[in-house]
Image (cartoon, rainbow, N blue to C red; front, top):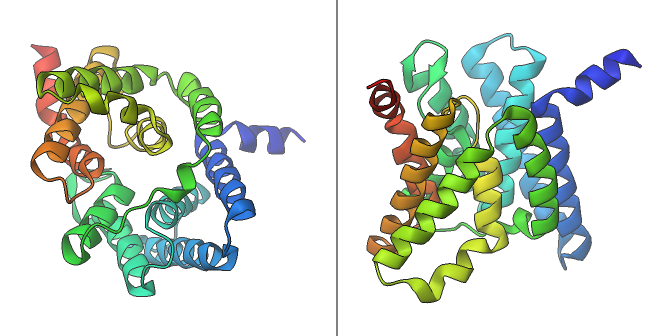
Amino acid sequence: MKKLVGWLRASKVQLLILLSVLAVAELVEHSHPMELITQLLLAVVAALLAEWAFFGAVSATSLHSAAITGLLVGMILAPGVSFNMVWLASVAAIASKKLLEFHPGRHIFNPAAFGLVLVMLLFGNQMDWWGSSSFVLVILGGGFILIRLRRTSLVFSYFIARSLSALLLGGSAGLPDMLLAPNLFFAFVMVVEPKTSLGRQLDQWLFGGLCGVMATLSYHWLPSFDGDLLALLVANLARPVLERARRR
């Protein structure tokens, strides 16, 4: 019993449960659930196999991370996209952890975001964020995990910067859209990924704020792409600069 409780207390396990519940909630209401199930299974299996292929013998924690990446890929890509796109996004996501590092053991990019952006650049914007339909589950489940991880500032800073930058660009009419389920899912799940975001309080405000500003600019200048995913990769790449700025 103690082992089960300890296992359930792990943040990655809690995130796996949250993503699974969100997926099931959408599957129940979808007219073609087998299409979504197949896409999810392919994304998760591809991510797990890629984790084993790139890293060899892996721990349970690494497998949890790979499964989370696969679920994110499957739940963000539009239902019914080609299997090649799902496979490529999942494999590229895991490969980025091995091939793109600031230093050994510290990968640069949020894996799922990297894989999704790659297929977006190759095949066009096929993002649907179908797994984010329940904003109540996203806020309650994601918020619980973030409070435990002490990363709530990332969410607040993202939305504040996103709103203010949109106002400055004259986009006040679109401000309510920032609180739609996909944006909440992005903020509560994607932005806060521990290994590719920042943990100190001021760092969180810098990182989340940069992500919000870059998302607004991306949607303004590159409307045919998913601006949030592009913004997250830019913020990931800027992590060392933000850390140095805070130290000064």
